[in-house]
Length: 459
Ligand code: URP
Ligand code: ZN
Ligand code: ZN
Image 1 (tube, rainbow, N blue to C red):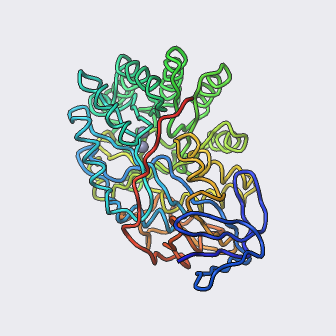
Image 2 (image 1 turned 90 degrees about the horizontal axis):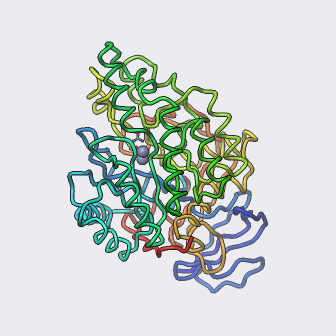
């Protein structure tokens, strides 16, 4: 059935105006005023509402075997949580370990999502080793519609690659027209510092940050940029958390390295004192790179507002309290991760746009459009334009609420942002023209989500 969203104020990465949006066969076909519509059209009145392009989370973990356990979400839970929070597309990290076969890993991750997601999705393909089979397998995966890789410079002996493997991955990516996303921390330093702290009896979650200090992330960021520069590949730093790493990345951008920067919700809103809380309360706030000294938050907000930080993701990665307790005797055993897929848009709007830190167009760009452009989804996604997929968020800026684990849709027993106020939330969310969320509730088709095939790009 065709759909009309009328009387709303359309806000995109570069425009703001009042108009109606008409949707047929999953796509936006007309935008304007006084549109003539056929009888039987479903009509949504967006008076007083903002109308945004569907938001895109470029950094999500759903299926994730990691640190002796599994992240808690399935695509059924993560995609509904995403949609309620206004995210209509997510990019999941496909993360087989070094011990796994790359192609089998890719097929496994795809099978976990296929027919189980309420929103659209794609993957960054992790390259966690580079052996005789890797190049052929990655070419096959790119032909299947994946045009971004992921490497970890951290997590030695599990996901982490060494410099030789990074070189090979970047060289192949350049040849194939693939962008490489990277977790940038020096694995060797992290592991030595962990050993030293544990040997000194420093076992609690408050020692997680000192085991991976800012300089260790800055080193990884700088090294990744140097490799990109010398190979001519295109890269994207994920979850950049602090000023020294930002300086490395900006310096690289300034000298022409093709590098984009992502920071994630926890690093804008939470600081290391959360991980210093006693016992499991601290463990709930352990992620990598760690929550940092609060002085970094203003730096991240300013860099985001200025467009130096390109995108805001979540690094959504839910481990419940019982799993966090695996690290009761040693912070190195605490499963790393903080969920946030349901809250990213609302908290970024509240703490960014409403608080006057972030222009509303930069907000749309950082939470949707820029990721679509970087990862080969634009203008199908990240835009409100004729011919774009009808992924539309009708946002109520007058809604007020408080973040709480109670009633959340993410499969987890806590929320790292518990108690934070929100000013605004999605009222209606569509995926390719089908209403999936209404009045803040999931009302749609739990299997509507599609795998998004992406083409290599000529950077
Ligand atoms: O702590 C985190 N970030 N957990 C997920 C794995 C990763 O590094 O992205
Ligand atoms: Zn990471
Ligand atoms: Zn991650």
